[in-house]
Length: 470
Image (cartoon, rainbow, N blue to C red; front, side, top):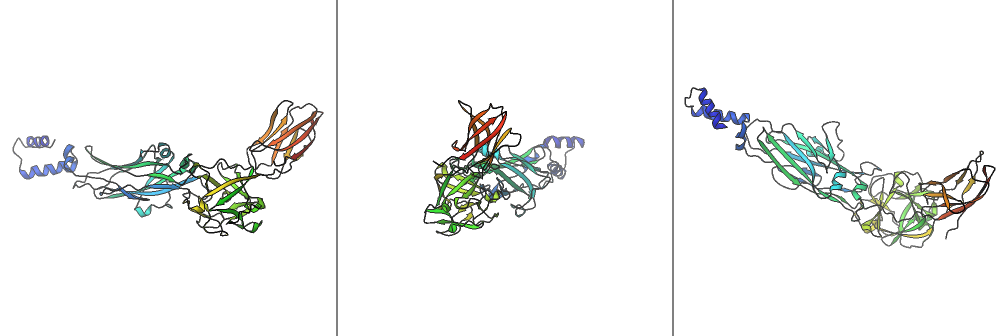
């Protein structure tokens, strides 16, 4: 194309030979205006590098930094979304004297591994003034953000990046705790992220380089499913029993590990599923049933653990995670994402700390005796068209109330809430007579029985009693 351009220029001068200076000036003009293959005379490179949490795309090849989700990376107090922040630096190291605009686009995507994990991990990317301007507290701006997920990929562009110039991108990755665990007994998932930078000049010059890294989750295990809330449990950490100090019953009493596993009620615990937060439980001591294990509503590692009056909020919710799919567990605060921890010997206050798998964070949980269901009451409203059975909180649900129909038990009402304290039986045109009923708990065990008398189209009387613990 340069030869054709020179020929055209010569013809424009009547076929006379061009002077060497004019020829050189014309070549420079062609290069600076971006004509065709003239870009083949350029040299260019874009490369990638990073360190954990602060990554770079620079001329010297090195690694693109890894990022790891852990339980404590909660996006906010009580959130089940985990968030990590990293930064990427992209430098145009093209060697040229041209002033031609050089657009840059950078694509962040999954290179290999963990397709489901990558697709479940959201990504937002935006430009910042420097690597230091991208921190975990940096707010995502209202505009100029490219968003998507690592599985599908996210591309962000700079309209022009001059030779020698650098652009800085802030990356915010987020995933739900459940997706990070996803029934993986090993407690970790991973995929290989990649950052591909593409630099263009005109229509003929294109350079792309790609770096890879690791995106992973660490010590995020699936929620345990085999701990029955219908039983009291013995909880052991580092050969010591979880204990309410001095058998205290006052709110604010410390929780401790105690070397003497005497089995008294202050060492017996009930794990009650929370109706609004699947996978999380309240932990209730038998010696003081109005109290719950409480993290103090703090995100601070090292904060002390107590039992406090039940308030049914995130500070009193915990996830028991099954380590390696076996019979040991770590207990994670919903509020902070930190692990329940025995930091010292017998009698030292339990704390919360980053989950590391240390012996003070590994628990065994052993089933003891069945929780005694309280004696229910039975009331009949004035219109006699329903029965209301009520009881003080037992935490052993979900519950079902059934009536005997002569040859089978039929379900009259149910509640999925483990803490339910009431069930209602509507009148369904029962013939006059006396009927039996029963209440079943979450293990399908009969916890209460009674009789109902129907007369003249309505309920007339009823009795109820708790079933004895077997």
